[in-house]
Image (tube, rainbow, N blue to C red; front, side):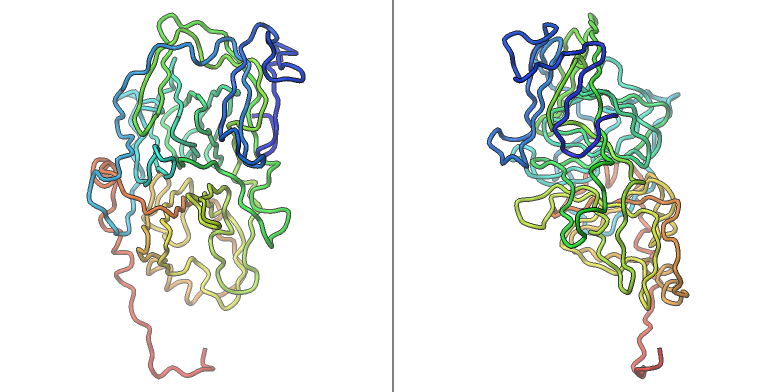
Length: 439
């Protein structure tokens, strides 16, 4: 990663080929170095300028040179939201199993498992939540998602992502976004696990800041995108391009590497961000601010203020609110809340919610602190204290009512059937004889 900024107009040349970007136009009759010009459009041509996304790629051979796509097995990747009956319960998963290298070699694509989601890729409106558990690098294989954008949250093991735009190393506590249609391959360095938020029909953007002002939360300067890097590599045995299209997987063969882009320019790129750079806003007087103040990226719906999906984090910070129950409050929400844990212990669930696991609190399903958290924080001395030190939990929040897959409810065998018991010991503290002034 080298280019800096969010959604900027970037231009990048592999230093081995200086002058490979055409000057003053996008598709000259003959491109420098005998390259092909190819546009990648991430928005309709006619989108308003602030939402218009496209990049021009100057490549050794164009993407169109490939054998026909044929259907291949999807494994545990699905867009079928009706596999099992709906389940409105509070759901929690123990850490998802990573296959051992000694037992079975599994790469990033083979290791994709859909947990929950909603909507429809065909009508360009929806989301999917996936986990990836893998142990092997992709060799002469790349992936592209024709359905939407992938926001990837590594939890264990760094991943080296080679894209048409260049390479990005992404470590736990960083995130990256591979936007719709961008081809990429994933190298891993051992047993590897993480989470993916997929959105159809919208791109991620930085949330508006409103009264917060011009600065804060995730700052544009902390986003990085790759610099041009090409390989001019023939693959006589066949290079496989795997295409996720309308929720299914298809593969085609070609005899060259797709990472043959010598130069590119535009504002439609993959990018990464380090969560430690998030400038946290918090309450400094009383009460508990809504978790929307922790939004890193949002994918907006057509309804003002309502997201298809928000990516929200709960980073280390100070808690200083006076005469306030400081942890998250008890809540019923018209949005779906999916949570994961990258590292550490989440404050409202010290036990049971583990790194590499997850929870889903569906639309209008009650949730909130467990009994230990409630009792401890109802009587705690309210001095300034560090919250979530050494921890990074996150939330994918969506206006969609997400269905859980058969893999999530049954096949993975990680569902914590005892989750509801963490609230069972909550008891009544009601005192009808209470009088004001005795607090």
